[in-house]
Image (cartoon, rainbow over all chains, first blue to last red; front, top):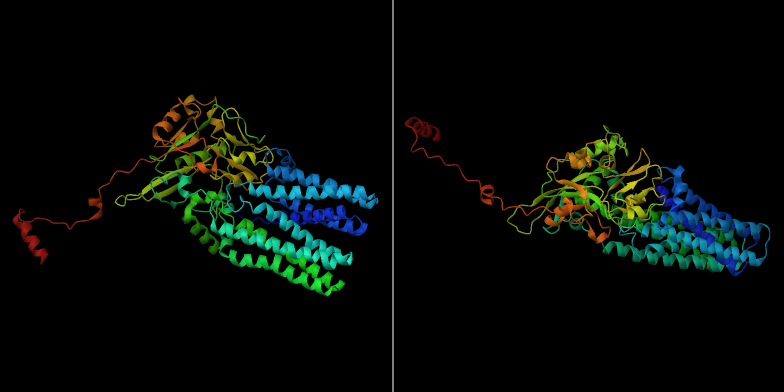
Length: 329
Length: 250
């Protein structure tokens, strides 16, 4: 599948934003006094700006963005519509919590807003993932690894940015020098494990459909495409037949793993051992940047490595055609 | 409204006979011609005379070679028109966030309301048959309408109220009719020839059916396989020709 930058930005940045909002909600629900009001407001603002920026980026993928409001209407059956509705609703607890923090509201009010925020963040990221997992035509998306992946990577991005923000705003030492680096390292390891399982799954299994079932000609024998309907690319071969990525997939997987798992663990451990405020600020900021870059590469691969079942109609012959076009450019 | 309507008794669709399709692309061209000027047009061409033309077509004709199990026989060449199958339970309709993609309750035709479409392209991702093509220039998704502006068009003669692709086919490999009615000509054709669904494992229950190509006859392998040396008997020819043969054979 063609990896459109708008969609990669949308899923990666909004996921990180909701991860940050979820963790903030969880922390405030557990202990409303762990962050000062100003610190909580900074984290809330960063998370909601990330979420809003990601959601706005998705509009650039549309052919008619001025009609985007129409996408809120079909929440009864469409996951994309549900995602839009959930994303808009998630800003209600964001504003409520912001208002409560600003007006120095009672701890019980804060806790209620925080819990609703955490729940809405999870729901929205689930809806984002369901847009992809609900497509039976794409084997790399229609499986059990994708939803946990979106949630875990959202959490990892959120944890890394929370660590950076907490370190920079001078939050509680135990949080900055013990809890958050541990959380980042654990989540990074979990993401790496999940991705390893996911990659093994897409490398060793195939979509059930074949060119024989797609044409119904399997009853006579093996089917081979000898002539495509068109000599140049069309929408389908451009959008669904993106083959360039698979050539460098192995290298890009290593780059993604290094960025979102190896470096964050390597940066979190010294912060745990040496317990220095300056070190924590530097390591946390670098970790946040590495994790974000790693999520971008991971998300790019998520699209670029996915094969659409319609390409069966174009057969192996098409892969040559598009490869030629790619090298010619 | 992108919820699927309850199953309609009337299921308009096409039956495509792979046995006699010759792959001339007349259906695809006629489709493009009609729909470019029809109610659901235009079907824009981007850079039509340039290096990399890109264009929206509702109908595409593939060609496949099928290795037959019997080694003696040459492989079968099958021309394969591919367009929207107007499925009974398609995901392309239910994934639509705006209600632009819908299935008509009265006859099962799947359409896109181009005034509501936001161009998110999720429906094209959901379709395994490649029936939908996004128009960059118009910013909306476009697809086969089963020539709804022909088949119900009372300004046309009754005989012309058929999809453009069916009208154009020079070998009559395409048939249009109600596949929900067991007594219709198309339903009888499907029953008689063993018409089948494409990718039944996807579970979308296509309305359009394909008729399988008949097994090829043996051909004449001896004639094709061993070209024999030509022999001319000059013994009965005229003396002049025999002399010429002798002279030239030296």
